Length: 175
Image 1 (cartoon, rainbow, N blue to C red):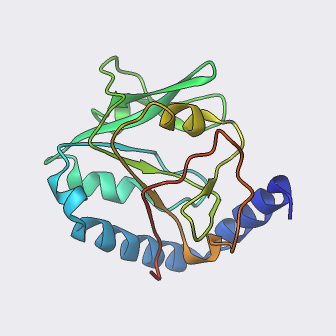
Image 2: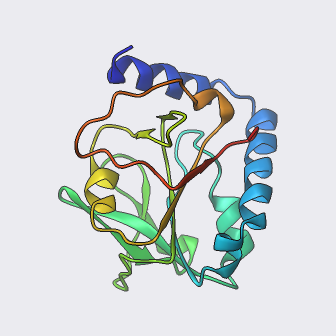
Image 3: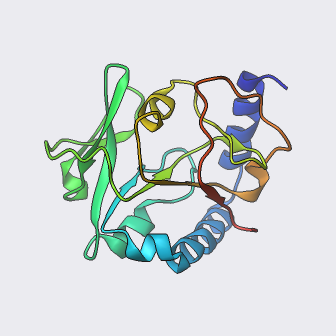
């Protein structure tokens, strides 16, 4: 299956989750992340702001905002920076309808980076939305990367290109 078709299919599956399924599956993933030593020990965490039924990161942010430095992505042209998260009132929608921070404090090397994905395979390769923002960012990132997704987003194999970098780990609601 080509990437465009796979993206469309996976996004549709995510959007078809009931609110109850979405919340339940997201909470299982939150529990698993909270048990990881790398997560417990990280002082700074880069994390995306969930969009269109991606694993809920807002509840995860609420759990850790008082104990960790949180950085969320902001797109500028074809590049992406991670900007300090201050509060939800300091967010605005970008051209894709995704919330972004308005501040100026940038940290492009947080201890841990929690990455969104549309699909993934058994080798921790990820399929994103196709804009290449995370591919470009991950090329220079030195910390640990964790993808979070629902179990149905896993496929046996993804075709990878030279710029595609596997994540260190992927956590879903099953494994």
